[in-house]
Length: 353
Image (cartoon, rainbow, N blue to C red; front, side, top):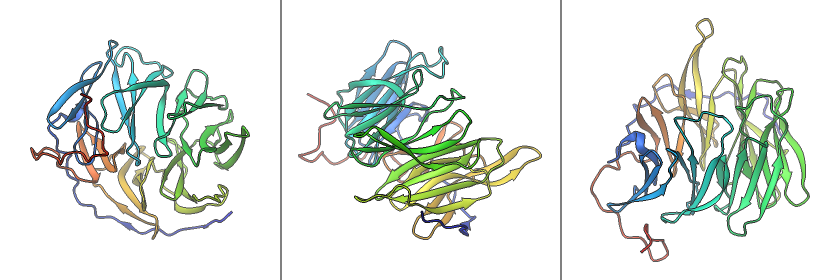
């Protein structure tokens, strides 16, 4: 196991003012938009998700239960997953199931694939994982062959826990779990042999494990829960045909109680960093940060003081704040009337005829 005991990171304290995301749609209606602005998914009204493309709009999914929607993509840009959250303003159970739909990129014909939450696409968008809070089961499903696997997680002391998962290949998946004593860990599971093993375990309780993956690497984040006085850490595992998941290096180590919310990009990791903390008043200043993997330096990307969430949409990194989206990475102005070029011959038309 390769370790770097202490890494001195250089933080660039100055960050330019972030631009707002400009579109022809109200920020509160946006659920997903492609980088080029060709495909935009909006909540038109409670229970209705719309798809807007090339100045045309259709009701993409209509649901009678006043639902809200979560639309999730991946770097592979072959499919999208839609979570339908029923009775969004009436039913507040932490365990209620979401209907899950899959749609090919740019297409308008969704297909129901299951029920759960925290849905995520993997491996060229051929696999999906999602979590059943009632049974504590992580579901793994191939969207092409329909092959399915189930993993029963440990009994949880808290209903707030939702595991994170990343597929390394068609046979191996890693996921976060927490035992009855409150210790979080990253677990590797072999789908063929049905055997699991703990790859990394947090040394203390009150810690959450985050996972994200991009080309050639898996990142494992260790961040304290709110109010817990612990430091933060990000580990990197190189992914290849001969991957040894137990061989990792520490690329970020801090005494600060960072929020985390990691997003893995090709050469960097974005996360929410704590820059200042008043333990007497129990307040802290948090900003969007970019960890450059090659140099292991951290750049602060915002000057807002209270960043609480990062959202990734088609390689665009956004901060939602006070009813607006601020762009950390990617283009920001999608409010023009310039027509996009026609789809190529091998690209699906946005609407079926």
